[in-house]
Image 1 (tube, each protein chain N blue to C red):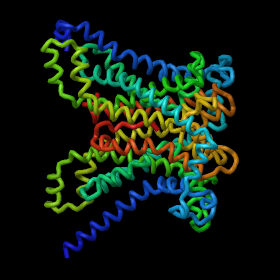
Image 2: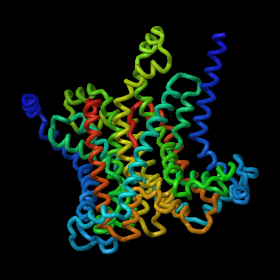
Image 3: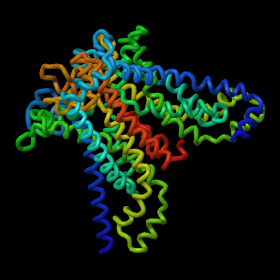
Image 4: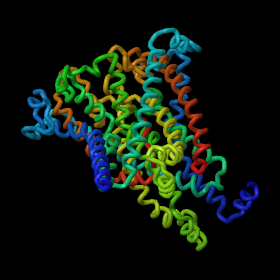
Length: 298
Length: 282
């Protein structure tokens, strides 16, 4: 290693190239540090102050905001909803994404078309997804109103969160499907032929050939989706604004309402810091899985 | 006998594929169809799949009664500039991290880790602190401020999509140019950049779509009615207290979704072939 570096240093134009590398990296690093990590640091910093949203200032209060988070109130229920939200989302997406990938992997006429059409919900903006489903689920005019009894699903505290989970799963099936299809492409066909000759049916071939090929990518994808699901704000907010009766208030929705309704930026920052901590743990798991399964990506 | 069994299985598979495709596209088609229905028809149950009497009235009302064209212009501006700034930054970083590892053995891994971590940060954590930072620089409630935030947000995503293209490009041509006496800069400009063009087009389209579709930052960092982007504008129409005109909302949804869905569909082959299975967070 040391050897190679010293020969690189003797190459003509080494210093010039080094300057070029700095020039290529610097702007992106500045933007990322200034507009992602600086605000993240500010949020953590604010969590130790009784910061008001209106003034952006407040006295130092130590861990008071955290103590208030955990002494009753809205935080723990929101955390519970976030866990339900993230786990159900990820499980639903992985399961249905796998089913879709299996269905659309085999050759048949119109496969390209089918794969393309299935992508549509994933390409549409979240605002539009929320709009469509608020219309479809509307008990008076929506298409569900044609059903007997016209169930009120988004307006009822016991069903609203599950309904939004279903919509979010629906939207993200294509993401998982594309990822798994890419993994299925290089599986040698000979393996399946050999398995068939040995008398394996569809399920045994799936269990002993397809699944082992997919598991590493599936594990990595599931952790990424877990991180992004915990942070998901747009769809639950636009479909129900946290209601009815806070039944869809996950941590990101709570952060918004603490910031803009209670004007309590200190508390909002403490809730955000807790979320960031949780995400950091899952991120650690993600890095570990990635190093284990995708060393060439490093 | 066997042949009959085979064709039943085939028919079953086709039925399943059609059902799945309808499950995914059906709701979007309902929006499209409802945008051509007058409200009297939408509000008259039971709902129908196709309009009895198709009309452009919702689109005309959208143009006359809302600021939709202004919102579209704002979105096109912020997404366009964000793409124009993000692409060269991403191209430079992708090149440096793939081809010049030996020249900055500490900085490159640092940059890669920072980029990956930034990709995972939940946007909701950044919204209010970013509002304060932009306020400090006089950029709150400006499209310039929003554009800069988009550059930071979508740079990791752009890198994720672009990197496989750089990894896949042959090194030989570039080395030949260097051996023939070209400077590194000339080699990049004359040899590497032309090879990156397809990747840059795909990445550019997906970054533009992500910025066009972005909702959270647009709704927090913009205030004035004349600055709103299309997502913030449409979400305002959705949350207005009075009974909304569903026809108008559906037309707004079609206008918001159409450009990105059409562009993404045109390029989706590049997602399925495995290059850049990246995603916009969320």
